[in-house]
Structure formats: structure tokens, C-alpha cells
Length: 128
Image (tube, rainbow, N blue to C red):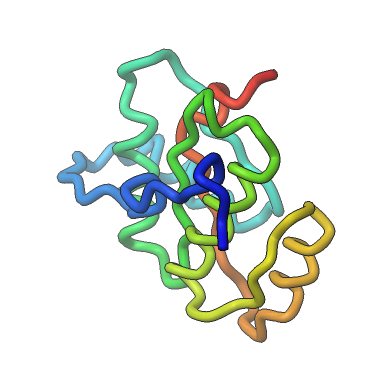
């Protein structure tokens, strides 16, 4: 059973349904993400980062785990609870009990799929 402080807000792990405009140059840059293990989308507030990533997630041919971070999620147990929910929504049942980064990594390693994407929207809010 999760403590109240680690309760998952389900809306934070749903990929937003958005209508996005085609931005060929930006879309082409984002498509290159597959050449890397980690990518960052950085731009000023209001420039459409979340919309861009939601469109990317909707068109991805692999499972996408989405997590919208907020400042009060910086506690490790809260963050891991939300990441576990995001990955479960994307991948189906995976081992639970993510009480540390190590157990989370082991749970993800047990997934038999080849590739998946984690999008953390508003990552900057987790600064401590």
C-alpha cells in the first residue's frame, strides 16, 4: 500500500491529446532522437514543447511512458511512484515496489520489449 504522500495522480501519467501543427524543421530534429539514448527539448515557456512531445508520443511506433512533473514530486518515492505508473500504462504489468532507483531499473530491465520512450514533461520543476 502506498503512503498518502506517494499517491499517484493519474492525470500526470496520461499522454495529452492535442492537435499539433506540423513544424517540419522541429519535427525533423525530434525524429533524430532515435539515434540517442537521451534527448532534451529545451525552449522558453509557451513555445509548444509539451504539444510537440505529445504529438511525437502519439505518432511513436514504440510504447511511450509520459510523466508530467511538478515541484512537489521531487521526493524520490513520489517520483518513482509516478514513473512506475507511467511505465505500467505504457508497457503493461511490470514488477512493482519501486522504492529505489535500483529496484526501478531492475523492473524495467525485466521488460521483454526492445525499445520504449519516457517523456518527462516539465522536468525542470524537479530541481531541489
